[in-house]
Image 1 (cartoon, rainbow, N blue to C red):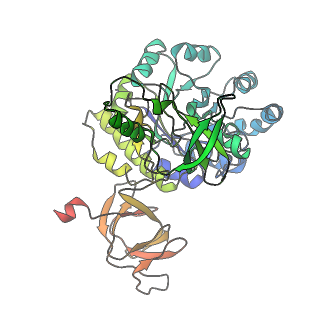
Image 2: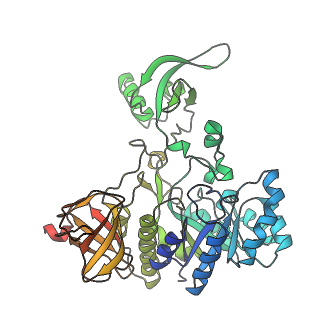
Image 3: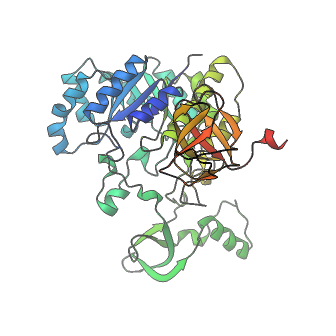
Length: 462
C-alpha cells in the first residue's frame, strides 16, 4: 500500500514549521488577495519565498493556494501579481477559477495546477475534463462518499486525487457560500468569509400571508427550539410513531430566524420533505478512515485550517501521520488517535459524507461554539535551560495540573509540581496570555507545545 501525502495548512511560517516538524509531507498557503484566506494570513511575497525555500531544504513540498472565484478586477491584475510567485518555484498552484487556470496554463505550462475543492468536482467525467485541461491533481468535493471516491479512482487511474480528512465543514457546497456576503458584504468566494453560518440565531414562530406567501412574524420566540423534538411531541400527541413514513403538519410550517447581532431582521426558514437545514455543521474527522482511503489509492490527505492555531496544526499533523504510518505498516487502527483529537476545539465531529449517516450526524444542534473536551492548549516552549523550559502562555494553568508535553519525538504526560516566574520566584498559577513562565522538564522539549488535561490520565488513577 502506498502512503498518501499528508497535507497541512500554513497560515504563518511558524505553523508551517510545526506542520513539518510533526509529520506533514507538504503544506498549502496563499497570497491574501487571491486565496480564500484574506484574513489571518501572513504570506506576502517575502514569506512565500522563505516558506518555499525552507520546505525544499527539508525535502518537503509547498503549494500556493490561488483559489478565489475571480471578478473582472482581479483577472486584470492576476498574471502580473502571480509572476513573482511562480518565479519562487512552488510545487503547485491550487486553483478553482476556470478562466484563471486557462491563463496560467498558457503563460506557465510547466507549473502543476491542483484543482481546488472550490471547483466542486463530484464525478469521474469532470476529473477527465480537467485532466484534458492540463490539471495535475483534483481535490475532490467534500460531498463524496468513499464508494464514489473509489469509483473515480477506478475510472481515472492516472490522475492524482486529494481528499479532505479533517477540519471545518461548510453548509454550502464545499465552501461556495453567500451568507457572509449577504449579511455584511464580505464575500467568502473572495477570501473574506466571516463564518456567518456559526453565529447565534434565534428561531421564531411565523404565519404565512395567504395572498403573497410571505412569512410574517407572530412575535413568539421559540427558545431552544428543535425541529426534531417538536415533531416528536406532535406525533406523540396525535398517537403516531416516529419513522412511520408520513409527514406531520408541523413540518410544513414556516419559521423565522433572527441573528443575535441583527435584532429585528427576520429571515424565513422552513422544512421540506428532505428535512430542515440548520447552519452549524459539525467538524470533519476521518482519521479512522485513513486506511480505507489509502487502499483506494488516494494520493493526498488534506487537513483544513489556515486560520487555526499552531497547536491545531501540530496535533492534527502528528495524529494523521501516525494513522498513515499504521495503515501502511498493516497495524490496526489505534482509537487513542480519536481521543487525542478531542483535545482540539471542535463543534462535534462527523465523518461527513465519506460514510453515509443519519442527517442529524452532520449538524450540531447542541452548541454553536467550539469545545475542547480532553485538553486545552496552554503554552509553547521558547527556551530550555538547566532542566527548565521557558513557556509562552496561551491559557491559564496551575501547579498540580496534569499537562501534556507535545513534541515531534513523542508526547508525554506529567503532573506539574513547580513553576516560577522570569525572576526565578516560585508561583502557583500562570494566568494566561501573554506571560512567560518556567516549568521543569525531563526529556526533549525544544519548541514543544503544552496542553492542560481536563482530568488525570487513566494510568495515573488506575
